[in-house]
Image (cartoon, rainbow, N blue to C red; front, side):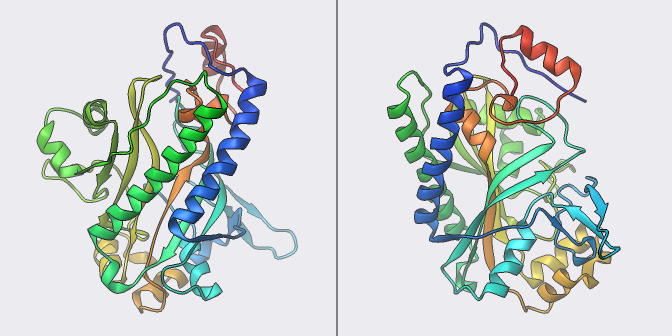
Length: 335
């Protein structure tokens, strides 16, 4: 169901022409800052994978991948939802050493995504993945990497504000870390989204940790597939968005499952049927490298740094009639 939030007296800071130029500047700047901060090499990535490979991500477990038949092979291919598992296999195939990693442009179609100011059926991300040593599979490594990514985002923000002085947003480099259970304990009567908004309004830049497991209340803060992130060593990087007045997720990331955590999480999620898929079998047998990785929303970052009220102002997608009419009436220029 489409949900449109209209900002009272909204006026875009940059017109469409300048917005397009600024998007290019942001993407070039951030790629440089990110690759230097995390020691990443750029690689090419697939738009689709074979469904039987186990490489596509099912996100919350209910999303339907877009599939099509390949004429020459007579087999099906599925448009990716994300590249979390593909990147790990790529690091293995490419022979990367520990301490080095990859990043790529990830373009996906998520046809079951609910549409609102932040969500589109078209997803564009910088997907990244690094090989780590066994002794680095800990919270300290996770937090250090989060701070490095936030630093790259804030460096990009500083540069774009110099280029476009009309932009007035302010991002905090200081990251507050909190677990989903701590959030529930702080705000037990609120929904997960309400908790995020309450905490981000006060702390501005936050990494919400440990997403996927069931909380004491018997519900999850949010869903996570059981076969890429370790639910005890993952989280979301979020900033406070002054334009929309809400918590604004920029990145989902984490230390990836090893054989033990994959085994446990497949059982918890009722996904034991995946154990014989090629990717999962290799992981359970300890044949794949230990990694950490995530996705950073390209349109999301542009939206935040250019003070846009709707993701359709920085990417081209398909919207329902109500969204188009509502945005037009509110002065929101949908591309």
